[in-house]
Length: 311
Image (cartoon, rainbow, N blue to C red; front, side, top):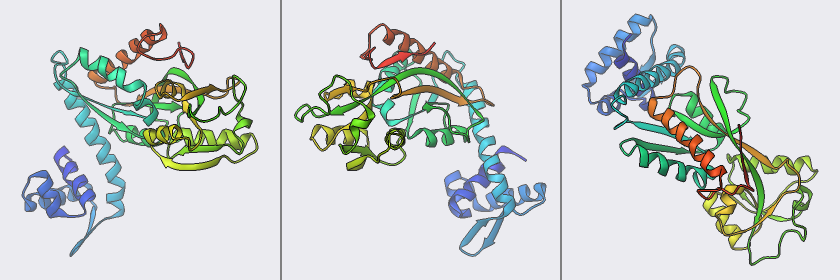
């Protein structure tokens, strides 16, 4: 079994078409078919049901596909690690992060990393924590900034907690404040018009869960937005929103903190346990930690009142 055979197999499985796969791989279609046949003979099982205009995976093919993808991802990691030994003058880092972190913490970290390693290509995948965990587990990311605890289906990942961040209520400065008190209670959100993120955002699930725990369903005036859209809807006076402290501090909106210490989230950096992150990814993680230590001293715009560095 050879790597190029697994690459051919995975590409055919993804395209469901031998000719299209050959075009993507820049090989002759007969050569690709021959290599697939050779792989099937070695494994002792057909990997595809072949019918005119219809290519489908057999049970054996379905079993092989996730393993082939993992092997190819591991081989790519090994190749990239060797290529990056030249003083980190070239290479890439694939970082996953939640939308709220992409709007607050990540830009400053990437600017600092790029200043130190300008030859490293930075690829950012923005998504919810559960989506990022799946992508990281599949070997398609080197690191991911996620909200802990990790989902139960992520035993193959290691996570280091970095930061504990307060969640706050953001409202339009042109609208009446959501409470007359200095701090707001979760119960005060009952019957309040709220702007809510699209499904898949960690903040949506968290806010809905704490409202239900308090005995009520949140009332949404607008829902389904991305981070920038939610900030715009709040600014327009369409409702209030529960936001991370780092995002709210940069938004220009009125900020009302919650009473107590329950409305917090923990930010962690995760990687696969079975594959050491490439050198460039390890350097990015180092830069993250240095940035947080600097931010704890009040620099780089991270409000100390909204965040707490974890040991």
